[in-house]
Amino acid sequence: MAVTADGEDGGGTRGSAGAVEAVFRIEQSRIIAAVARVVRDVGIAEELAQDALVAALEQWPESGVPDNPAAWLMATARRRAIDLVRRRETYARKLAEVGRTLEDTAPPPEPAEADDIDDDLLRLVFVSCHPVLSTEARVALTLRLLGGLTTEEIARAFLVPEPTVAQRIVRAKRGLARAGVPFEVPYGAEREARLASVLEVIYLIFNEGYSATAGDDLLRPGLCEDALRLARVLSGLMPKEPEVHALAALLELQASRTATRTGPDGAPVLLADQNRSRWDRLLIRRGVEALTRASELGAAPGPYALQAAIAACHAGAASYEETDWTTIAGLYGRLAALTPSPVVELNRAVAVSMAEGPEAGLALVDALAAEPALRGYHLLPSVRGDLLARLGRTEEARAEFVRAAGLTRNERERTLLEERAAGL
Image (cartoon, rainbow, N blue to C red; front, side, top):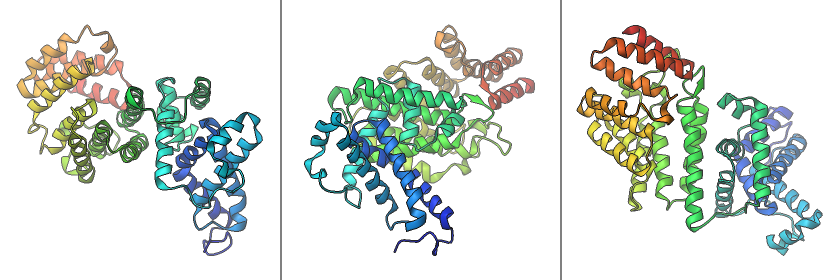
C-alpha cells in the first residue's frame, strides 16, 4: 500500500519531499540513461529527469509515495521524453526508431528489464567520458550524470568556483550534441580507446579524493566513495574486461587505508606510520577478489592491474619494513615499461631504496631531476629529502623538505613537510 502524505509516514509534505529526493539521488543516472536512449541527447535527458523530480514533488504530497517510487519516476520521465519526441517534427525519424509501439501506449509502470537498464547505463558511461571532451569536462559531467552530485558539490570537491563547474557541464553537453556523439557503446578499436578514457576519469576522481591537490584537507572521502561506486558499477556492466576489474581492485585496496591516512586533527600520516590493524579488511578482500577476476580473464596485466598488484603487496604486509619491496620495485619497472612516466619512476625509486638501500634510490631520483614534468612536483624534493635524511645528509634533506613545502598547494602536506624540515 502506498504511504499517504498525511498517513503513517509521519512526515507529511516534508516526508514525501525527502522520499523523492532520496529515490531520485539513487535512480538519477538510470533515469537519465533510459531517457537518453529515447531522445539521444544527455542534456535533454537530464532536463526531463529533473521534470520528473518536479512532478513527484508536486504530486506525492497529495497522492502519497508510490509503492515503487523509482518505477514512477522512470515512467514519468520516459513518458515526457516520448511526448517531446512526438511534438518535435525533427524527432519524427527518431520516434520511428524507438518503436511504433510507443506511439499509442503509455510507458510501462515498471522500469524496463534490468539488462536494458544496464545497457543504458553503460551507454551513458561511454558518452559522459567521450574523448571529444576535455578531461575536466569529462570529470564534471560524469560526477553530475553518474555520480548524482550537484554543481555545488562538484565545485566544493575540486575547490573551483561553482560557475566554472556549471560552464564545464553546459559546454560538455553542447560539445557532445555538436559532435553528434551517438548514444551507444562503441566496439572494436574505438571501444578500447573509449574504455581507457572512462577508466581514466574514474581514476582521476578517486585520486583527487585520496590526495587532494589543493586546499585545507588531505582527503575528500566523498570523491573516493563516488569513484569506487562508479568502478563497482562498471565492473558489473563489463564483466569480461580485465582492466575494469583491475581498476575496481586498485580503488578497493587504496580505499582500505583511508581511515589511517590522517590523524585525529586531519594531519597526514605517512604509510610507514599507519596503524595497519585499522586498515579495512573487507575492502582488502574485495580488492583481492577483483584482482583475481582480472587475472582469470587471461589478458596480460594492464596499468591498473599492475598498480592493484602493488597495492595488494602493501595490503598483505604486516609492517612497512616487512613489505616485499623487491616485488614492488619489479612491478613498478613493468608499469614504467608499459606506460612510461616520470612519476612511476619516482615511485620505483622509493621501492628500490627500500629493497636495495637509500643510495640506490637516490641515484634514480637524481636521474629524474631534469624531467620537465616533475619541475613543479613537490613529491620529487620530498622523496629526495627522505633519502638524504636516511643517509645522514641532514642539511641537504632539510633544504629539500623546505623546497617541497613551497611547491605543494595542499595545506596539510605543506605543514607536514615544514615539520619534517624542522625536525631535522
